[in-house]
Image (cartoon, rainbow, N blue to C red):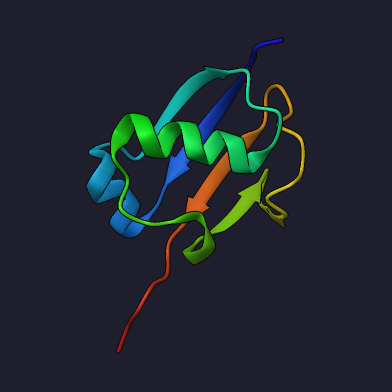
Length: 81
């Protein structure tokens, strides 16, 4: 069953995707599958193992189910000085 989520892209992911956020209808069972789908569609450069994921402002595990109406943020490694 398809659910609608908002996806936020930060830093280098935002640059690679060319967008900061999007609404997406998805059949992904978990956050890992959701990232795999958007990574393939947008040719995102980071493998999942290099990212953190958050749902509704809280860090989450990749195996967590995708919930309708949630805001999912994919967060790449950030360096600073």
